[in-house]
Image (cartoon, rainbow, N blue to C red; front, side, top):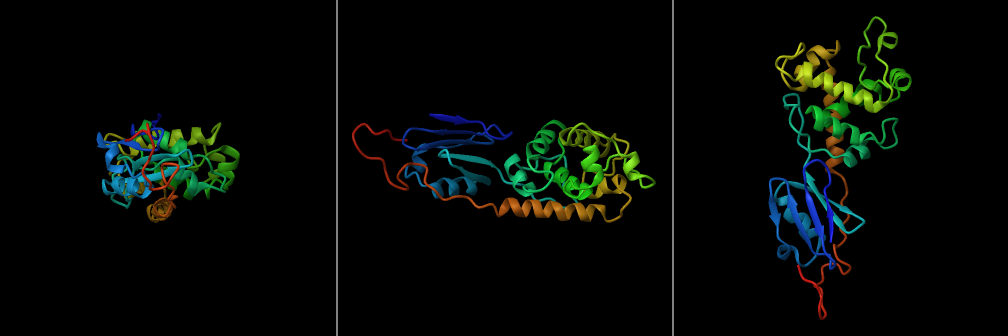
Length: 243
C-alpha cells in the first residue's frame, strides 16, 4: 500500500498491489475502489474531473488529484486559494531565472493567503522572469522599494528569491488585501494595482501573465497510462487481490 499526501489540500491516494486505487479528495469525497476496478487511468481521470478536480499521472503508478486552478481576472478575490501546485508553476517557469520557485509561491500562499498565480505573475512582470538587474543582484523579484527616482539604488535587497517571495506576500496580505491595510483598495488585481505601481496599466500587464500561467496549467498533458501492470484488464488468478 502506498499513501501520499500531495500539495496543501490533504488529498490521500492509496494504491494496492494490483493497482486498484482508493481516492479521498478535498471535502471528504471518496471514490470507492469498486468504481474503478478496471484500473483504467482514463476512468479515474473522468470520475475525478467530473467532481471538479485536476488529475496528474506519476510514473510511480500513483494518481495525484488536486483542485483545478481557478480563473483569475481583475475582480478575483486574491485571498482565495489559487488551486495551483508547485509542479504546475515550475512548468511555466522552466528555463527561466525563476525556475524551481513554484514551491515557494505555493508555500507563501498557504502562509499569507495570497493567490500563488498572482504572486508568480507579478514576479514575472516586475523582474522579467528574474532577468532584471534588481532581480539578479538584489534577489528582488517584485521591485519592492524600487522608486522611480532611483529604482536600482532604492530597491530592497534579499538573501534569496524565496525571501523576496515571502516578503512580497506578507506585504500584499497585510497592506493591500486587508481592509485595515494602508494600501487597501479591494482584494483584487485592480485594487492592488492602484497603489502598488505608478503604471496605470500594471494590472492589465500582470493579468496577461496570469492568463498565460493558467493556460499552461490547463494544457498540461496527462499521460494516459494504466494504473495496473495490465492496462484496463481485470486481475485474475487464485488469491489475486481485488479493490
